[in-house]
Image 1 (tube, one colour):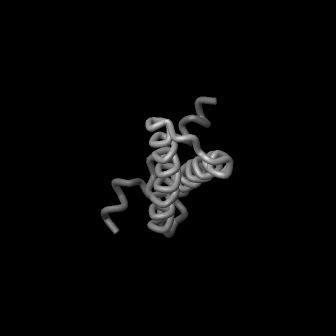
Image 2: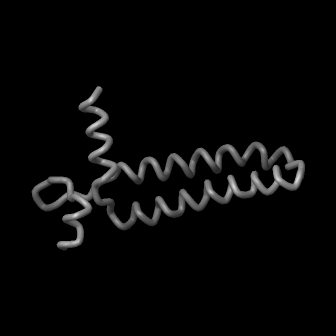
Length: 91
């Protein structure tokens, strides 16, 4: 179990390809917007339509899933070794 947690920790800290950085931003924006709309409805006592209550959970879940999957992708050098964030600036 400890080896698995160390693997997750190292993958979380490694550098990501630029495409996945942008995709992560988009997923965070999508889920963050859905949460913000929910909070506005809750704060002002607005009763949301049924379609919004159905779609909202998927917007949040898919956005969080995109962020999670993108965060675990790694950049590799020519030898197949993962690139650390500190090594990324040397490119």
